[in-house]
Image (cartoon, rainbow, N blue to C red; front, side, top):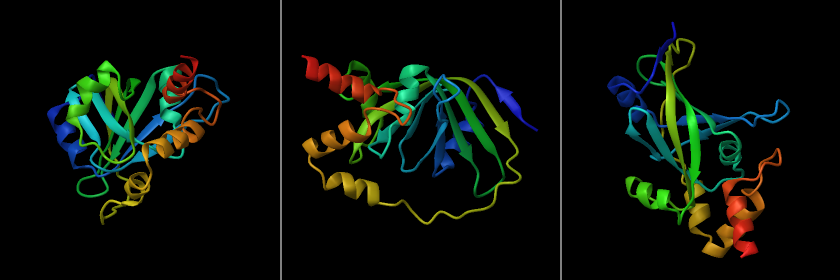
Length: 190
């Protein structure tokens, strides 16, 4: 029942745009490391081309995807139909982290509505698109976005956010340094 494509087709793009949540999967190279699957809400995903996507990543309690991308670049996006006809769509590719203040950030940031707590953009070059039936996925209804994360970030000043990121977003749970961790280390060495 699964079908594989080399790029995002117009009907895939239409499906992706309708989803209110997506999931991002990544893993370290070593077999001992943890596979990370992270749900993403808000209107943060952008499709730049049939083989390029990016999302505005908000400050959270961890930064696993960022660490894995720096280490090996592998990333998977998953979109699931919880309403309407069943389908699961996955995007497989190689990604990178784009930090504020970099030329890539300046090129990409205009595509996003900057939300409180925005910490980086996750960009991916898509190599494979796969659809599958999704027949076993239950129906769920959408009641709205949670505002908790944005309220938390809005109640912090820049220094408090930086301290939080230094403490929680610099190193993955497997001990892999993230781009934020690298950036902080470089700024401390200057």
